[in-house]
Image (cartoon, rainbow, N blue to C red; front, side, top):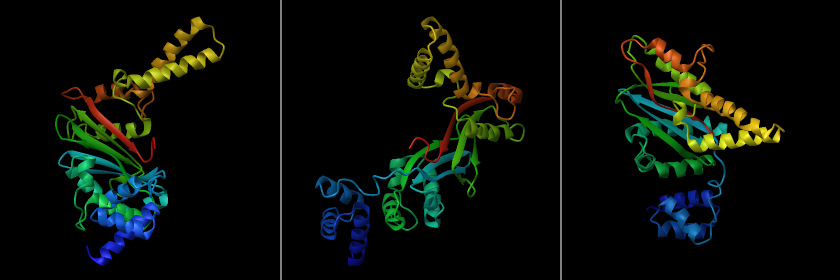
Length: 288
């Protein structure tokens, strides 16, 4: 490692940890210039309790989608502020990440260790970008949709650029005929972006979520002073509504409130029954 590379790494490590020059140099020397291992080294020594920037919340950023030959990959990259999410260096970094994410089929561990155009691996470029911009940046989540069985469709809400936005919904549908009823795919993705379903059908919703909701409903009814014999009856109606409101097939279709999503799928079926096989929705910062 040249003196310039050593000084650059020490500067980055100081920026990330707030630790003094001498200790940062020792950490860099001990870990052959690996910044992540150097941060871990300092934390184990008790010199850095936690990286200054890494302890902050990153709930802004971008969602990006990459599509080739019917396959599709989606990634969320977070920053602390929307100002950074509009930064040219951040956007260019995210674009290259999105392309690499497609090649690694949404595998975050592989993604972190892939080389970028400058010859450095992703995780090292990430540290450099954090040091340069001065904000926490994280690669939060990814998902890959292959081209088996169904056809993949996506919708980008309020696109910043092509295939880049704050909300992206992806859906895999079986039974779509390209050139005949394929416009339905994008419409279903648009519906998912707007309606935020938890699962395809009622029985697919996580039992823990349903049980927790039922617990809240029963407590709310009991606290309102209703007789105990009415609690079960009212809570049954409320949990049924919750299941319908949060399962994609049972949701009210955003383009026609008189119909459900399942009705729209039946109406648009030509030769084969249209089935939704999988979907996802990434909204920047949701749940952070």
